[in-house]
Structure formats: structure tokens, C-alpha cells
View (cartoon, rainbow, N blue to C red):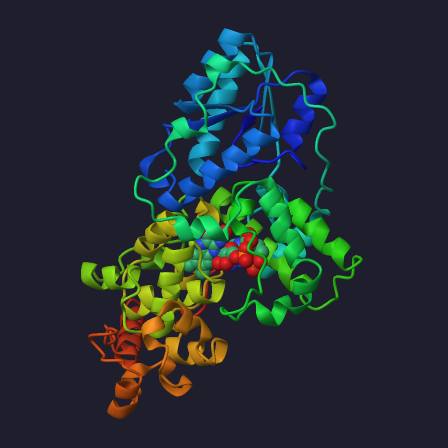
Length: 474
Ligand code: FAD
């Protein structure tokens, strides 16, 4: 049983199948053949380390951890130990699909049976197509006319009743040998916030259900509230399946999808599906603009502003709060992700790939499908994207979703004493207000690195010049 992004025992179709066949050898491989841009970022590695430890414990410390070229490791393993059947749950990143196809072929040539399963999506990407058999490019028809009408998601299955494991000590290098933890200890705060692993995932879900789901629709947009489920990293590493979440949500409201919050929450799981769907059908999604109109767009090369953005030092409070939240907690509220993305791509005119790369390194839930699709959405370059003229105004967005500045004060404590009226735009505050709040712009807190109005106009002019269409494609 080759574990990959399915680090759990419950509702694990490949594991259930394997356990019914007989004795299993559970294996995890840190695959050195992973192409450089897709290698795990630092935050993901931290998560994976703990997630593997948790899985190892659930398997009575019998998980075999190895590193190396996955194909080589598997073929050697199979030969040395006369393994008859290899099973795994499918992954959907293009490089993984290519690798898995080759491994499957090589194993078949050796006379080894290979069985693969869907353990991480509600709907297989190839099952949902438009009438003309081409893929959807717009979310709502994909989800409402496609997914919801194709078939109901598979019901989750319980943990296998018996697991007979053959532990081959000489083949287990141990989780620590994978060197996933950083040498610099930047994760003390993150250690306290998150509990990677299958039980941590269940715990998160039960904190969210049944009560928070009811307020989800309104609370999900307020970054100072714990209004969302916090399941994204658990889902990414497969410590819980989307099926488990989907059915737990329905169960919590006795199947009443009319209930406020429920449809909204399920459709967010739908956005996750859509991201995987796009990645599957359009494998260049992580690096190429989905809309070819942007191919020759002249983005600005501005390393200094990029650094200000990364470090939460742009002088725009909600942007800085978001970027600092990311650094300190390994995550960022969804609404603020949209704001910092829009600020980078539109106000600074820096290409979205640079933002995506920073997220990839810092996010605990870094996910190639969701990250690429979401960045393209924010940039206006994607399928079903926000049109270019939607340039979020971080001040009015902040006033709307963080009206009392609680979120800003948490992550930008140097602005703590500013009155609510100026917490989103300290540059507008009269000198005496700044003095009494002990804020010297440019010293205690940066002056804005761009003028919001001018940079907005610059973006509109630049996009117009390139004749980017007003409506999203698809
Ligand atoms: P909830 O609101 O509780 O939602 C439940 C689940 O639905 C999430 O756990 C997630 O799996 C899924 N989901 C929710 N919103 C989205 C969305 N817009 N797109 C895809 N799936 C969604 N999500 C990632 O998992 N990994 C990423 O690398 C990632 N990068 C992003 C980059 C940008 C620029 C933006 C705007 C969004 C990104 N998202 C990403 C989507 C979203 O921000 C996170 O999934 C969400 O904030 C996770 O918090 P939660 O688990 O509390 O979500």
C-alpha cells in the first residue's frame, strides 16, 4: 500500500482493498524525482513530518518510510519482497500522473497487479463533461449542472476491521530520516496552532460541526472570526477525505441542504474539486496564463516591492496583516488571500506566479491545484476569473470585513492605538492622531509603497492597452 496524499486509515479505498486481500506493507516515499517547482515548500514539509508520524502511530509504528526515486524504490521493494499487488489512491498533479502511469506499466511488465482508487476527490475529473464532451471552464455550470447531476459522491467507508501488516525493519528509514523539519526553528507558534494527522482532522471537523456551519455564509468573510473549518491542509494531505466532510456536513443538518451555510460550505468543497478539475484538463495551469491574452503582458519586475509584500511591510494595513498571518500561522484567511493577491497583481503589477510561489513555500495547505487556480482567478488570467477591472480596494474591503480593525491589530500591533476610523488608512490620519497613537509613518509602520488610486488606474490602463476582454472566457 503506497501512501501519498491519503494519510489516513478511515475512508481510504486503496487501504480497504489491500486489507481485504491479505497482509500489507504500508510504504511512504519522499520522491526525489519530483520536479523542482513542485517540491514541497517549507511549511508543507513541517506538516507532512507530523502527519507521517501520526500515520505511523496509527499503524503501530509499521509505516515504511523511504526516500529516493519512487519508481526505483517501488520496483526494488517489489522484487526484494515478492510483492504481488501494489495499490494506491490516485494523485492528480500532472507530474504525478505521468510518474504513476510509468510505474504502473513497469509493475505490470513484472507481472505485478496494480490497483488504483479515488481517495481524494468527490468526482473524478473525467466524469464531469459538458454535453459536447469538452471540459467546463466556468464554476457554476461545472458544479451545479455537472457534478451535482452526475452522481452523488461515494459514501465514506470505515477503517479496515483488521490490518495485517508485514513490518520489514530493514526497509524503514523512519520519518525523521526524510529531513522534513527545518533547521531554523521558525515553527514554535505553528506547533501550537495545528494538529496534523487523522485525529487532528476529525477534531477540527467536530469543532466546526454542527454549530459553525449555520453561520458559515456570513462568518466566512470575517478574518477576525474562526468562521471557517480550517480543514484545507488536512484535506490536502488526505488526513480526511472530502467524502467524509461532505457526509458529515449533511448528517449534521439531517440532510437539509436548504439550511443557511450548508450549500455555501459544500460549494467551497466544489471549488476544491473545480481546481483539481482544471489542473487535470489544463495541466499548464500552475505556470501558464489560462487566458492566452496575457501571454505578452508586461508585468513589472520589482523585487523591492515583492519583498515588502512578502514581509508584510507594504504600509497597507490589511495587506500587511494578511502576509504576517501567513508567516506566523502558516495560513491566511480566504478573503485576505484574495486581497493580497489582487494587491500584488493589480496594484503592483507583479505577475501572479511570484505570489503563488511565495504561498507555495509558506502555506501549510499549499496545494498545486487550489493555489494555481485561485491565483489565476485573482489575477484575472484564469478560467472563470475575476475580470481585470475588479481591483479590490484594500481600504474599503478592510472597512467592510474588519470594521473594527481586530484582525489588523492582531497582526500589526504597532497600529493598535489608532482609532478605528484610521486603522485601514493611517496615511489619512491627522498628525496629532498619529502622534497620540505613537505611530510615525515610515518609522514605526511603513508609509504605503504605492498610492492606491494611482496604482489602480495604472493597472486599468495597462490592462486596457492590451485589450484584455471585459468578460471572463469560457
Ligand atoms: P473553508 O472555508 O472551511 O472551506 C472548506 C474547504 O473548501 C477548504 O478546506 C478547502 O479545501 C475548500 N476551499 C474553500 N475555498 C476554496 C477555494 N477558493 N478554492 C479551492 N478550494 C477551496 N486553498 C488550498 O487548499 N490550498 C492553497 O494552496 C490555496 N491557495 C490559495 C491562493 C489564493 C490566492 C486564494 C485566493 C485562495 C487559495 N486557496 C487555497 C483557497 C482558500 O483560501 C482555502 O482553501 C481556505 O482559505 C482554507 O480555509 P478553510 O479550510 O478554513 O476553508
